[in-house]
Image 1: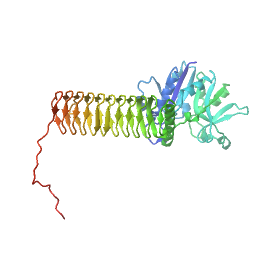
Image 2: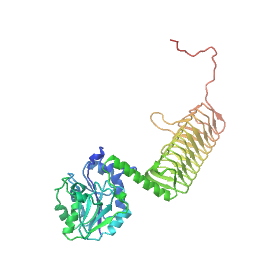
Image 3: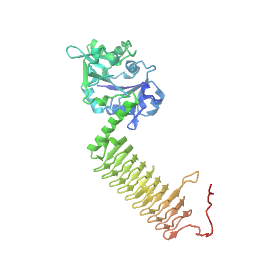
Image 4: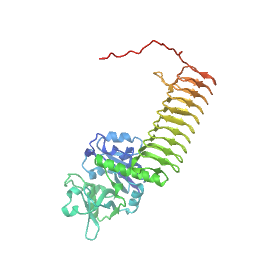
Amino acid sequence: MLTDIVILAAGQGTRMRSGLPKVLQPLGGKSMLAHVLATAAELAPRRIHVVVGFERAAVQAVFPDAGINWWEQTRQLGTGDALKAALPGLVGAERVLVLYGDVPLLRSATLREFIQQTPGAALGLTTATLCDPHGYGRILRDVAGQVRGIREHKDCQPDEQAICEVNLGMMVLPVAPLAGWLQGLSARNAQGEIYLTDVVAAARADNYAICPFAFADATEAMGVNDPVQLAEMERVFQHRQIRALQLRGLRVADPARVDIRGEVTCGEDCWVDPNVLFVGAVHLGNRVKIGTGAILQDVEVGDDAEILPYSLLEGARVAAGARIGPFARIRPGTEIGAAVHIGNFVEVKAAKLGAGSKANHLSYLGDAEIGTGVNVGAGTITCNYDGASKHRTIIGNDVFIGSDSQLVAPVTIGDGATIGAGSTITKAVPAGGLTLSRSPQRHIPLWQRPRREKQ
């Protein structure tokens, strides 16, 4: 059947205590609405509609190329009124799946099963049985056990509050009678809102079949109303992500202390220590080791490489057998060759290091091309910025850079050259030999340091 999806995302979320619309609050590195849109797209519907209201322009601006049909709920009068705003876009559809922008953990497989188990002319609703149903609408059944309606929590009588079967919110609705059902809804309730859940009673009155679908895992349908719930959902999301990686072979010292804000893929026998953060697209080859406190963002790491503790890598490629850190910073545009060593307090930016090169201590290598087998001494700086433009430093193969050297770009150092410690290099260095720039050492025997007078 021709199925559309409508995502209700118009609420302000006052309990979030945030100027950011609730559906844009981050979960696992992207907004809650982005998660819902991704799940909706996996279902391949005819069209995806999003109903917005609070900070409409800000929400739409985050998804400029998502192929979404946007609809505005001008006043936040409830979920029934919100769906009514999208009715013009449902022309030509046979049924509609209703989702929510603040329910981001839904799996497409679960929703696909829900849709398949709802007959074409029926109303499908999602349920779960909870030990603590507080806050949820209750499922009301008749003496024959058939669903006759949904009562929102604030409208429940004491006997209804004892019901543990609850409404999770997602619905499949036939489009043909939907406009009439929505038009007949009333706001005569405890919250003064037009509840979408009231269409269940309307459908029953019109002799439509009501088909409840029980979620095996109710955490999929968790919604967010405040920062506490958002943090709780973050932990559920992280557990799901880490568990999936573990089942693909990732070894994690403590799953509760690794966060993923993007997508991670890995080969065999990789090891991750606690307090590691993955951001964006990260790929780990085989037998990669990630030390505690490391942050990897949009990084590709080759086989047998090791990222030592508290290193930050962004937008870089690390080849097989390389060793990074501890306390190293690898910035965007960097390519680390095979068996390269980047040590403590070394920063590399937009640079390429050839196989076997080393910079083990306290150096800055920016906008540089460094050959194979190069040794960069402690305190070396490629002076790449003249105050207006960036310039490149080219270092050949088998070069030795002495400690505390400044290479003032643009400059080229030939193969096999040695730069004496403490040198400032401003001109091209030929291959081989020793190049250095030092002032003559002098000793002044009678000179004394200034001393502070005793009080």
